[in-house]
Length: 214
Image (cartoon, rainbow, N blue to C red; front, side):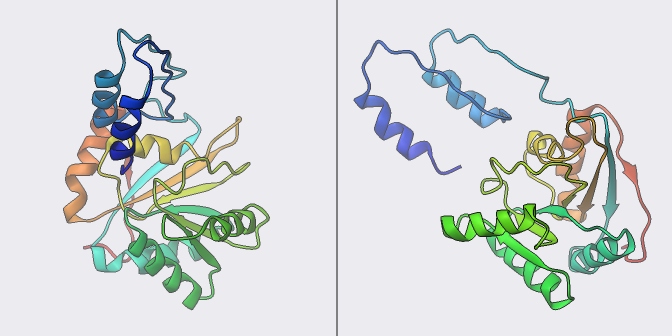
């Protein structure tokens, strides 16, 4: 995720005898491989298995052409009267395009990603938490640490390449006994990601028909 070069610079400067503790909300295969290369006989402590998604999250998938995703997003927000949702994209550019489209349609939205300054990210998150902003569009790295009480909806505008990331995303809703909803959009190029998610979850995700079907 971009930090490997920093790690390689820091490790040689540390004492040979040391204690290392590694924390992560999710551990993708590449991160597990990295940790194994740095740690000596580590003890692993897990709160819940990586494939365990919140039981109270209603998950559904919309198979849709890539060019129709933004139209479908606006339709779902209005059709379901969604007042607050965290929308995930894979890229910073994609997040900005979604925000521009939503604001153009009268749906207040802000993006949070690595190209935004710390102050801009904090303002966007604050506005989202106090409901001044209706939709927060985030990339996975920038979304680390986002914790919003009683967040009702998570929308995967683009599916993540790593299945474990999906679990992390939908876990932002359905917390503390509250019910949550997770919508996922899947185009033809993302089918391999979707299959990986269902394999990890060991369950089917409900398919929903919509006016913008392929």
